Length: 279
Image 1 (cartoon, one colour):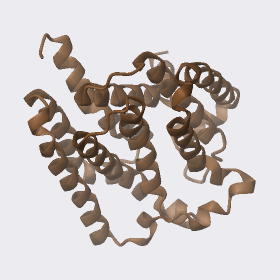
Image 2 (image 1 turned 90 degrees about the vertical axis):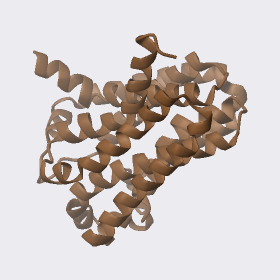
Image 3 (image 1 turned 180 degrees about the vertical axis):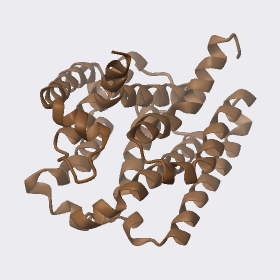
C-alpha cells in the first residue's frame, strides 16, 4: 500500500507539481515579490499536473520499460483524468490573474510546445528542436522565477541573477535526464544538444552550467540573508556530486524523485529555516 501510494504521488505528477510551487514560492521570498501568490501558486500546481499528465499520456511504451511508463500503461484513465482536472484547475485560478494575460500566455504556449512533438501534427518539431534540454530548463525557469517577477512588475538585477542561477541548475539536472535517454532519442530521431555531444564535451557543459549557477548565487549575496545563500548553494554542490551515480543508477525513482527533488531542495531548506524560527 505504501509503495502504491508513493507511486501515485510520484507518477501522477503531484510530486513535480509541488516542486514547481515551492520553487515559485522561494523566488517570491528571495525577491520580495508582492502579488496574488495564492492564485498564482494554485495555477502553477494545476497547470503542472495538466502538462505532465498530458506529456506522459502521449508517451508510448518503449523497449526499455521504466517503472513510470509501466505505471502509466496501467493508469491511462487516471492520467487522462489528471490532465482534465489540471486543465480545469489552471483555468479557474488563472481568472484572477487575467490582467497579466500576456506573460501568462507565454507560459502556456511554452509548456504546450514541449509536449507538442508527441502529437502527430507537430511531430516534425522533434526533427528540428535541437535545443530540447535548453527549452525545458527555460520553461521551468520562466514559470518559477521570471513570471512571478513579471506579474509583480518588479524587474531588478536580482531577478536576472536568480533567473540565470535557476536556469543553469535546472539545465544541469536536465542534462542527466537526456544523457540517460539519449540512445532512445537517437533511435526516435529526436535531436538535442545532448545526443550530439561526446562525453568530454558533455561533462564540460554539465560542470560549466553548475559553475555559472554558483557564481549567480554569490551575485545575489548582498541582497539575500546568509541562510538563503546557503540554501541556493547546497543543490549546486549536490548536483555536482551525483553525476556519476545518476549515470550508473537509472531507476525512475532516482530520476523522478531524487533528481527532480534537487530542483526544490533550496526551497525546502529555505522553508525549513523559516519554520524553525529563522529570519
